[in-house]
Amino acid sequence: MKHTYRLIVEGNSEEDAIWIPAFELAGVEDGPNLLILAGVHGDEYEGIETILRLFSALRLEDLRGNLLMIPCANPYAYRGGTRVSPDDGVNLARAFPGKQMGTVTEKLAYELHHRMIAKADFLLDLHSGGTHYAVASLVGYYHEEGSAFSHRCREAAEAFGALLLWAHDEIAPGRTVSSAQALGIPWLYTEAYGGRRVRQEDARMFYDGIFRLMNHLEMLDDPLEWPVGKPVIERKTIYSDGNFDHSATAEEDGFFVPAISLESEVRQGDLIGTIYGLDGSERQRVTAGSDGFLVMILGIPVVRKGDPVYLLASEMNG
Ligand SMILES: [Zn+2]
Image (cartoon, rainbow, N blue to C red):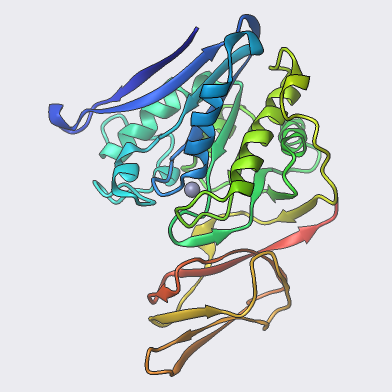
């Protein structure tokens, strides 16, 4: 069975009812249920493109188990081309497991949690930098020494084949992945450069990574038919809670000129960039608050006081 259907989320009135496209491929042999989400943030397009390509490429006889893909998990934000839903100002990635009687986005989270995530054996949530952030291309996973659950997430992260892995020992509540974790469902998510344009290298990383993940989960009938075998050379792991809400923020309005590039290693006090006024004045020298690896930097030069400017993670061995 390869079909599309629509998950209905009731809005606050009949006219608000919203339809979410879902692609389901029920393989001819038994296997795990893999759920892939994209478009949780409505201005991140890499995952949407990846799911459309996957749905076009895959045939049922290729699969063991079930592949369920939601190309656009937040139609409100997608419609607005925004990170959060313009209808209620809620960030879907902070709204899980949702509220049955909440705002439209909280209802959306409730439906996705109960009808999609809760039935999965593995969750992959595809994100990127979107409009505002430039983010290193990576996969994020749950890290806890000695935990069998964490081990399953790490193995899947390695299988995905990204050059950069982001280990999180803490997961902010309200995310798809924290929802999955509360149910004991292993998960991964991706990040990529963003900027409302899909870079070919990011599209390739997502697409190939999903085949490698499916191969790892033993979901491919004939793995050699797919891009599963590319070796990863010099993988790097970084470490922090991964919450963009904890980014260093601008103290002034202005025009941000970065001094270093994404994925740089910095020392505390190093210059990250300068916020200028259009009169040429230097309004703020943004410096590193600690040593670390630059995993996110502001992607749009026009900055307002309070906007996230950068996020550092620590490097770890292994
Ligand atoms: Zn996102």
